[in-house]
Image (cartoon, rainbow, N blue to C red; front, side, top):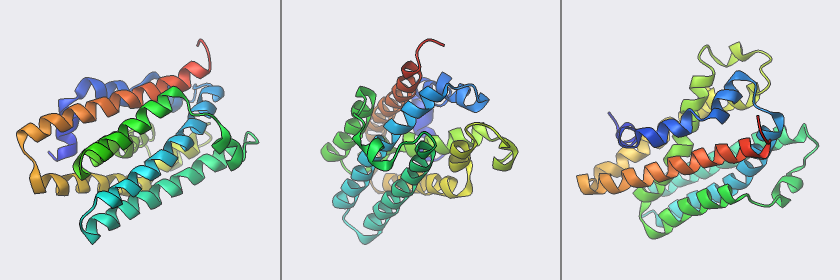
Length: 222
């Protein structure tokens, strides 16, 4: 069991509330209202801007070229991910400028500033644990929503989104994130430290669930 699985096991309820949220289930079933997905996607773009800053902070917090290189890879992955959002939003006539001009929702601010504060106040391990529910969680969700492979999604209304996170490229990003956690833990992990990090991981998972709920709430009553 790697550190990521240990963190999940220590925050089981928070994790399940996130990865098995009604937003995720309805997205997988293709019944998620387009309005909910659109709100989520715009907010997630704004969210990724702050996540890019978090990886820049990771580079600043690093003390070796290897750690700086890892932060650079994470930043590059986030910038690539934003292109998916731009492509999908273009279908609704929204330009990149339109997306960036949208006000941040409270749930977006709460989560992203939580991550940035975890990194600013703590060390690299704190920052990567705060990032992990998003980075690795989306890979787990992608796999769960495409159990028979991306090609089998066919004309699913959210096939492109699911395919992004179920695909080999993003799965590789998540695998690297897990290895990074193991590497950092090998340097200075103690049981007391693990307990503190499990609390951080659980809090980030709850904020992820709140982010999904923000999308659902934007579409009004089911």
